[in-house]
Length: 178
Image 1 (cartoon, rainbow, N blue to C red):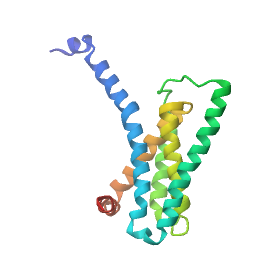
Image 2: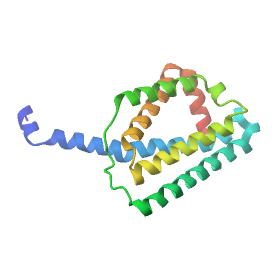
Image 3: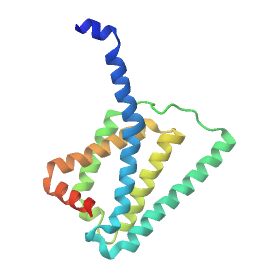
Image 4: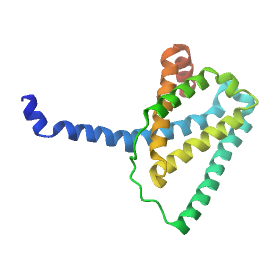
């Protein structure tokens, strides 16, 4: 089959459209859900065995914070009307690269950011952000351009950290097996 016939049959645009929809509808929510699961599993991390209560409190505190925000937002929607935005609202490459850089730096400073004294607070922040991002991205859809860019940037930054530091990937995989 020649290239012209292939292009005329519209296979490529349909394939790209399918790939785009898989990323927008499945990959982004999956990344956010995985972040939530990994955050919850922090309590079984041997490095933080003494902070299990703090980690669990941070996780449930993050969920409670999201519940507060959702009640506040829905109350505003009842008065002003629910938004009817499409799931894809654009993409900002600079925000994506910025989120990648911030994630890479945070992973490099993991011991400082998620130290023994701040692990509960870190878990609460990560839990609330990832859960709120997931709910806002799928249901509310007010900030999807920003959320899409940040989520992909965060995933890329984390993978970049693992790619540049094989020991961190080995540690990560060993902890997820437990």
